[in-house]
Length: 190
Image (cartoon, rainbow, N blue to C red; front, side):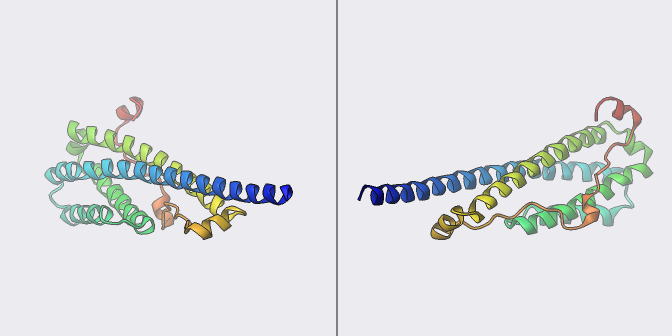
């Protein structure tokens, strides 16, 4: 009888422990996604100012400016991680093209507002990369927990579903965004 009580106690304790672990990991996952959202919002907030400055110098780049603005609008509307990652990939390509425009406009490259936005964008991109890494690491830990035994039993009982990684869809999107235009900025740590 004591052995049976010990087995039941151990089973209940194991289920409670797994459930609590999965809840904690899911909460950390939500926190990590929130961190990615904060960095994406910072990036999205920089874009209108960047487009405005470039528009003043590059009047002939109307299609590109509209493309970046449209990509930003699409990127902010997704709740699904996969769709958001796709939209953010398209936005990154648009930003890369927009920043490449500065090479054709020497006055734009020398504009202090543009240089300040460029520096801010570099910082945001670095922080966004760190937030994505943290999020994806949290997704990995959570998914391993709910897919391995006995976590998979508890996950099935309580409806824990695997989370999606924040992945870049196209190999071209994986290229580093080069937003550095002048040698003097490189020397200043930008």
